[in-house]
Amino acid sequence: MELSYIIFSVFLVVGKYDSAPVYSNINTISPSLSAINFMKEYGYLESGTADSDALYEKNAITNAVKTLQEFANIPVTGQLDNTTLKLMASPRCGVPDILRKRKNLQRNKRFVIGSKGWKTRNIT
Image (cartoon, rainbow, N blue to C red; front, side, top):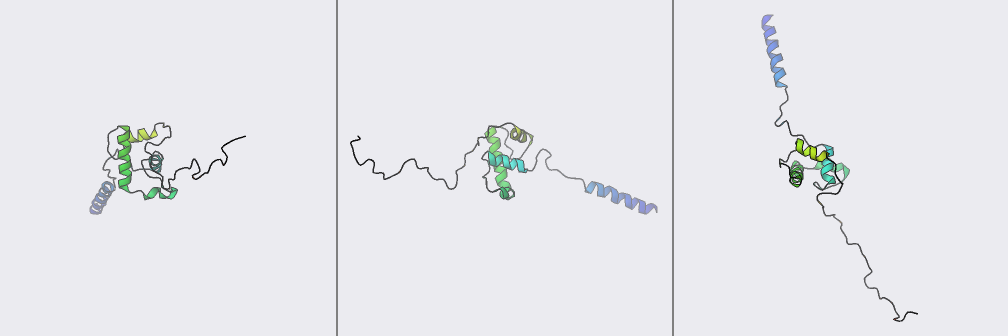
């Protein structure tokens, strides 16, 4: 009886410590949907369709965070730390920091080419 109690206690203790979460860095947070939307809105990530938020590669998100940190003149870590999240929560005017080229960019016509103009020179 006593041996089974000891074995049960060992399994209980080992199971408790084995299931404890392990964090590599407690200050980093994985990018949430709001963080991705922020980086899309201000030009750090290319905006696609609404369904494509989960298709960003980790390197693209890391590079976008680094660019954001460089632009804001805060320590560049490439991770969403507390300083970066505080920056993202601060009020903004809504103008993108990085202007990306639109794919189907065409020049707006301001006049008609080939207009012959007036047929008569004297206006009455």
